[in-house]
Length: 185
Image 1 (tube, rainbow, N blue to C red):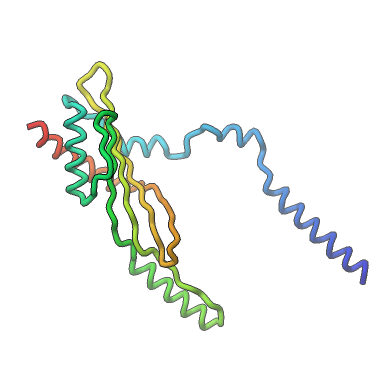
Image 2 (cartoon, rainbow, N blue to C red):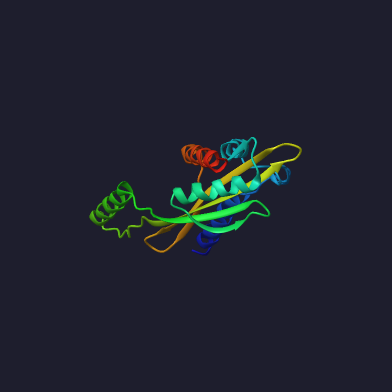
């Protein structure tokens, strides 16, 4: 019996050591990743940024403010001296498919005699930050906008996500261009 306990202990230690050794990462690999941009950064920046001709910073921030208000956002902070604007809006996050899936999973689990507590997204806060910067030596302004959201589920747990849907950025810049045109008149 004693040798069986030793054998079980040996096997447990060997399995644990093998599992931990698989988690090791080459220090050179880590060093190469530090300071390196995440994959897709260039594409994201391209989606978030536009350059506008023959305009000034104040017109850009006024047009951005009006655009965000038209899209249902409430302005949280505006600092025209540094070219920054932030806004947010609250929205429902429930999706019928997610709720139905959780209910189906709960019923299926109950049939198997396993407890499952359904969880789905409840609501969300969508944040937007707009940064404008004059292009030195020109009459141009670079504008960058970033959308993110904080989602709360039915267990009052939160998660934050960067919004990377090209359609959202395209819609913003289309409406912004129209607002900037009206601002310049």
